[in-house]
Amino acid sequence: MRASGDPYLQHCLETAVLLALIGANSTVVAAGLLHDTLDDAFLTYDYIFGMFGAGVADLVEGVSKLSHLSKLARDNNTASKSVEADRLHTMFLAMADARAVLIKLADRL
Image (cartoon, rainbow, N blue to C red; front, side, top):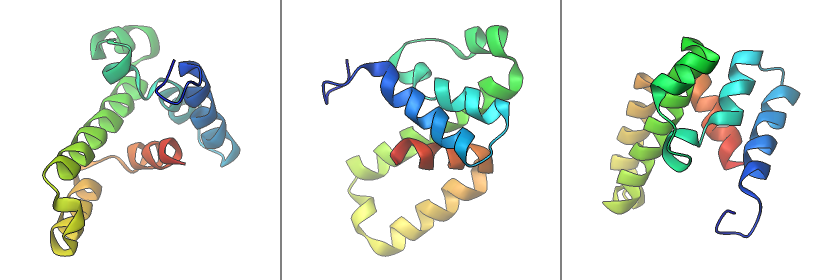
């Protein structure tokens, strides 16, 4: 169960469905379904790679890295400082696969 009381799988399914509805390909939809597994389900990159391939594993890892960077910004209160927030935003986009950013946006919705 998530902190909200909703079943854990519901959020992952909703993320994947949203990605499918906007026309994302099967790799992105699968990564959307698995996007929280590295952090919350304690699966490894190697396990996801073995089960779903490099494309899905790389995207799941990319979303996880974006989540960690966002958390770091919040923990250091840099997100409230507009110049630093702009720098972090630029850094996120520069270092991330655009598909990982899309998954993270669907996750936040």
